[in-house]
Amino acid sequence: MLPISNLKMAMVPSAAITILPRILNIAHQRFPNLNLLLEETDSVNALNLMLDKKCQIALIRTPQDTSFLAESGLNYRELQRHPIKLIVSSDHELAKRDEVLLSELKNERFISHHKVHSASLHFLFEKACFYEGFTPQSICEGSELHTILTLVSHNIGVGIMPMDILEVSNSFNVKALDIKNQKLESSITIIWGDSFYLDSLIEEVIQIINPCEKELILH
Image (cartoon, rainbow, N blue to C red; front, side, top):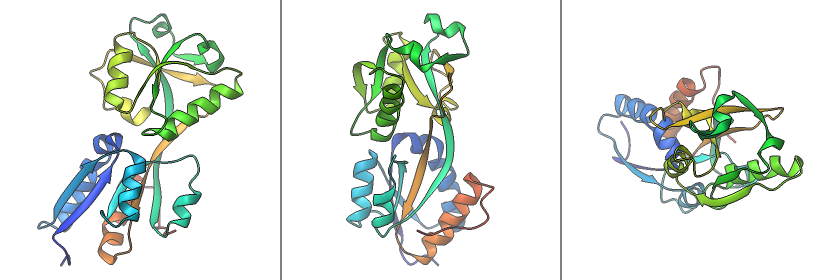
């Protein structure tokens, strides 16, 4: 029997869309009396909630540098990685294509990910553009993926988006293009505190999301 009745989970919006439903299904099958308290937030705040012991599980966008996670004393595990695509309005001239070179985008207007609230996606793309010799022309930054998709769909600018989000965003008027000669990927990392029942629950989650994993590795 679960020793507590409430379990608080903090997560970024993208994880709430793509991963949370699977966690809830598993949790309620194993612990039918468990009350899950959910807080949708950004990665920085989710990690702070974990460090302050104000929640027991967090789902964050995997940072570029994971060293601070290793030093935090928390358990963490990266979940499936997904390619990052360029997204354009279906009315954009690039929508006729299936792939594009990053260097071709130097004159495009970008709806960028927020440098604080979506830091991993923001700096990943900034770094890739830097190595191609340009800085993306950002006309605005969005912390919500829904906002970025909406603005791109109205042809205000172009943007980037992980494929896992695009797979559940079919209603938007956008076209996803491969970025040639670049291996841009993103993922969600699950973080949890020390607890026997959490290890058991999260091991099942990882087995479903990363079926090739044979063991749960604690860091």
